[in-house]
Length: 327
Image 1: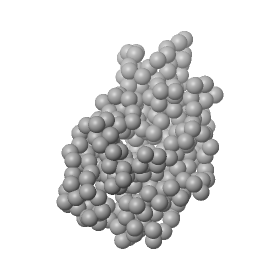
Image 2 (image 1 turned 135 degrees about the vertical axis):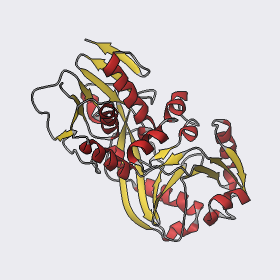
Image 3 (image 1 turned 180 degrees about the vertical axis):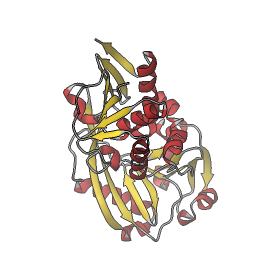
Image 4 (image 1 turned 90 degrees about the vertical axis):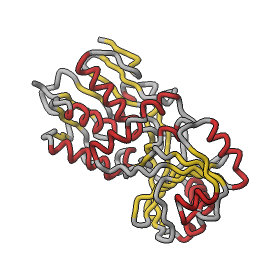
């Protein structure tokens, strides 16, 4: 029985490999950099498993299909923290909080006392917020490493170049590199900072709303925080712009002044692969199944897309998000 070959060992490729291997199929992965690292955009992700929050600005399938991601990641990596998401706004931006509440569900309102009970270090700083109790988060780097280790434990082979002979079916999960075949794929640039601020303790991701530059800050433990926000129509990778650093740090300072004394440990930027409607796609062209377009929802939607890909490969069914089948 020949294995399925997966091109790309980012979050999409690893998720599909895990889904297929769990179902008993032999799998091999091909990637020039088979170990998770800064070469992949998954490395720079926030790791928020927040289907209700994402629905505020995303299409309905993002919430519906993302609801199963928390259990999937917990089952396969054990890295999930189920502490919910806290959404806040400064006094001048309370209209943003009301708008966010209208456009999402799965939350309950908090007053100043409720915010302080959840996050004591934010006591007295905000008068109102929203708590999405059923959401979660993980460390993307730890989760990617756990998936890879789990696949190796199942004797899944990792190759830097495609070995011979070619398999009967291969899955292309190369992200933005697949634009050589998927001409409507585009890059959406995201930028992030990693800070060390031992004077602030947070137990869950916090989203600080702003009409122009909303911030999310995700605790990584031991006083380490990941800050992110930007969505720029560009496929430029690598260095973070001065404007983005200034805006991210200003928003963090508004959340808590202690962030003004934080150490900047790391900056990074990468381009997320996205289709015109910002929803993922499965496309079958002959012997190749393309899985791509996770946009900013990589960790949230990869499990659902992986299950759809596995279902198609096993049964031939045409699942949701499959918009092309050709010989």
